[in-house]
Length: 97
Image 1 (cartoon, helix red, strand yellow):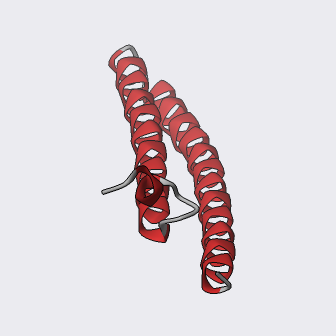
Image 2: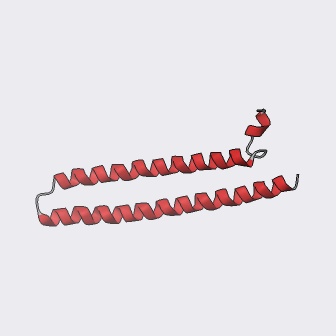
């Protein structure tokens, strides 16, 4: 295997693999953020003294997670759109060789 075959511009399969790895890394990053949020919520819940405090903690957690997940979905969507358009360009340029 030559060094050329590992260049994303010369090998679209290698480029796809790199994109998949970057996507998986982003998913792992989001997982760590979301797991951390769950532990913070559990810590807050362990300190509540009234039913109203419980409801407040849960409602705040759900709202924060909804906002966070919305941002994460938008970021992943942008990532996929960019990767798809780059892949299409690479495939078109590869066909013209």
